[in-house]
Image (spheres, rainbow, N blue to C red):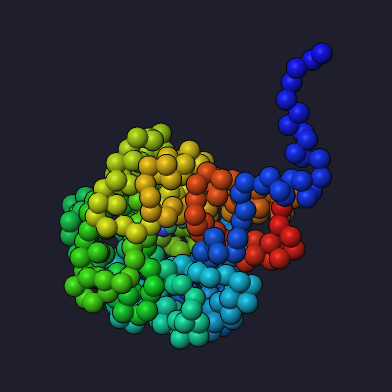
Length: 326
Ligand code: PBG
C-alpha cells in the first residue's frame, strides 16, 4: 500500500479549515494613514493612489469619523505644509498642519490612537529627511529638529511618535526630548528597518516629499541587506523604541520574521504606497480580485510576524472583514 500523509483531511470544509487556521486579521491590526493640508473642502485624489486623498481639516473630520465607525482603532497622520524651507520649520511649528490635525482628531475621538509620522522631508525645500550643509545631510543637527518635531506633536495630543527619517540616534534624541518635556508616557514607534525603496514612489506624490537632488541611499537601507536590519533594530531597542517597524512590507516578509524572532517588542509592517498602487492598478484593469488579494497580502504580513500593519487598504479591509474576511 502507498504510504503518504493525508493533509487534505483538514481542508475538506470551510468549518474544518476554520478550526485549523493559524493566522487571523483583525481591525485592531490596522493603522490608517491620512494626508492633511490647509484649506477648506479640499479632497484631492492622489493620481497614483486611487481612493487615497489629500484632505483639508473639514474633510478629514468626516473621513476619520467614517474610519472610526468601521472599527479602525488607530491612524497615522502625514502633513503637507503650505510653505517649505531649508530646515523644515513647519514640521515643528505649534500650529503646523499636522499639529492642527492631531488636535482636531483627538478632540473628536479621544479614544482613537493617533500616530504622528516624525520626519522633515515633506517640510524641507530640498526634500531630504535632515538638514543639509554643502550638499551633505547633517545627522546630528537633524536630530535636534526631529526631537523638536516630536515634542510639538506630543503637545498637540499624539499618542505615539513614529520617527521615519533614518538618522542615527533618532530614537535616543526623541526619547530624551519627550521625557524632558513631560511626555515620558508617549511611546516611540521607530521606523527602525526602513529600506531605500522604489515602492515609496506614489507616497512622494501624495506627500510631495521627493528629494530635489540625489536620493536617500545614505540614510535608508540597502534592499539587499538582512543582517544589517538586525543591527538597526537592536540599536533602536537599546535607545528605547517601544515598537519596531519594517518598511516596505511585501518584499520584506523575511525581515519582518527576523525582527519578530529576535526582538520582543511589537512589530509593525508598513504596507507602503507602491504596494497599494500595484493592487489598485491591476484591480482597475480587471486583472485581479482586489478583495481577495488585499486580504491575502495583509494576512501574509501577519503570518510573517507583524503585530500591526500600516495600510492604505485599512477602511476597505475593515469592510471586508465585516463581510466575513478571506
Ligand atoms: C517620510 C516617509 C516616507 C514614507 C513614509 N514616511 C517616504 C520616504 O521615506 O521616502 C513612505 C510611505 C509609503 O510609501 O507609503 N520619510
